[in-house]
Image (cartoon, rainbow, N blue to C red; front, side):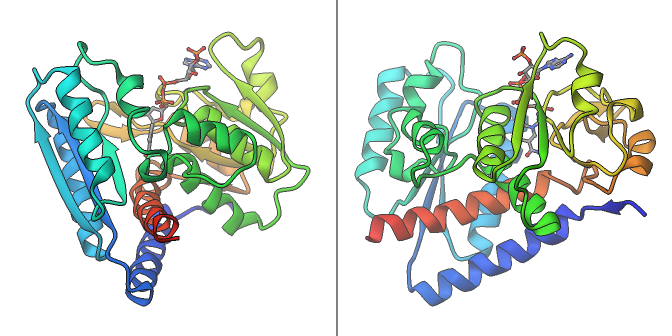
Length: 278
Ligand code: NDP
């Protein structure tokens, strides 16, 4: 019987734990969410993050800035938030308008307040096995995997996708759990054959239902990070209906990885507040 991994339920438990830990800690973590412009999708994401943060006792503040703000003005705002003792987490909603250098903005955030884990210092810390803030989506995936499997040592893991926000940090977290990791991407030869070696297969591509049943080993665990909209309906990068029967466990879309991302953002904000207190 295939287990359908309930990310919604797990994320609710993680949020409840974060709420409890915040109460016990006596901390008042502060999260600043910076939104530049008025992209409707970004507005929804920011609203959801703000609301989820408040529910667990994080003092969330959304800072809305005009789409034509200059890079210097945005960097000045970041510098102000870096200095603000009430703010422990800073998140800049991506994408930013084209005239702004995204990397420069992310790298201007104090790495210890970088709750998205995108700063080059946090990427470097993760790569060299030092404590730091880890990108929320891969963190959510690894929590689901550890909850399901316990020890991941020695497993063959294949990650499809090599972005800085999902694929690469995901591969790094799996390596830290002693998996043998392959990172596949658009230039990979024989992608179905590579994926068929995986005990753990993570798809983070952005192509609806790309992963088919013959790409998946019998009894594999499949984590579908993809969020795609087809005919008004959400679906993942995995063809769930044909792949699920072959799996030991699989995340659905929606209701799998998605809810874990925000829950991990809240966890990261608490972790940042704890680190900064020290
Ligand atoms: P990117 O577009 O940045 O990266 C996609 C990756 O997939 C690239 O490395 C690319 O390879 C690879 N790729 C593209 N086409 C193919 C192909 N035909 N075969 C093999 N590999 C391919 O996307 P993200 O990493 O930002 O996001 C991936 C997906 O995850 C998206 O659907 C996104 O919406 C979703 N997502 C979900 C989140 C959640 O909370 N659940 C959070 C973040 C993202 P190459 O590098 O060679 O171009």
